[in-house]
Image 1 (cartoon, one colour):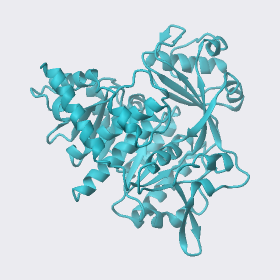
Image 2 (tube, helix red, strand yellow):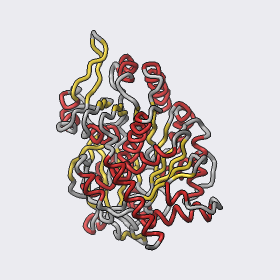
Image 3 (cartoon, helix red, strand yellow):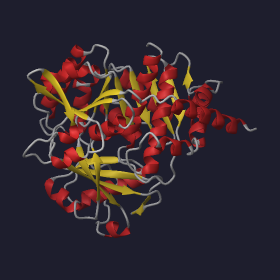
Image 4 (cartoon, helix red, strand yellow):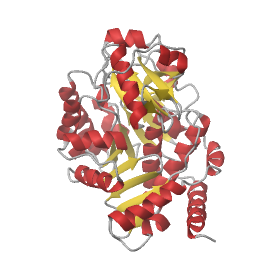
Length: 449
């Protein structure tokens, strides 16, 4: 039997073992900050015909008109990058009329909390910032809770029953395109999307600081995301986030704080995230496009190859986090100060969640993991791990391709499962990151770590 086939069989066996262990059962998590409504629009020839011809190939940092949107979409398609770009009010109104849409749960906090709550015996608490009846309806089939202050202290109520009067939820437009979509001189090498966001800033939940220490006692980790939506007064908001982290640690010194980076077009804002917040968190998650922006902010030359990616992850770890997880299409990388094996198994579970979500086109249920198991492990991912170890790291072994980590290096890498024609791509990175971390924490708890 060829070595490559043996490797695929070995990885499939590990996927089955990790799935059968049900690591997300009894998960305890806090999710903050953004909950939005996503309006998903399919990019087709009719929509593309409404756009002006792209005029430039560089990254668009803010959308002010349809020309900027066309330029951003062309960049995303040509470079196989998922993008999230803030729109001025005039451009946002024009973009909202480009095509029909379907409405789904959006925002990292809402997506991840709905995912985790689908597993048995979970405790999932979400930050509530803009909860009108439409936002509350995002949680109609879940046991996700919102924490509110009361005379007795922390009170947990179902998110579907919680609303705030006189607020409007954020609405993001998600323009999804399929692999092979052609626009200007570009052709998409994978299914992906561009997200158009309004300028509406995230608001902090009233009374949030008073109950955070009590919330922390009920959870094992806090998943923080959406910092790119903190508005123009973001520096003050970031210092409030630091205070929130302090209060969480006050209530639970063992809590793991994870920061999920998202596509932040304002590089000054991204720089402030690193200056103010990054040293306060334990774990960071991001994709390859976001890593390039991070490298630019840190003054390093971006490199899309695995070696450059690891160097970028090391730069982030040098600022304080103990764990940095990079999710790409065919493989995931993680630098960790801790158990390499439990990190690997966590990433495997995250990849399984990602495949299930791509197959279903929305947030998967535990039973959807059975269908995800039928998706083959990426042979290209295995080959990349072999080349990375032997060519770039100059190692004569195949530890990455065979066991998923290098002993003593704190480097973990796995081949993923690729759904060739995904029904949806929105929120995949957030679900992968959160499931990977939650599973890793569960595996460590089982070992008494």
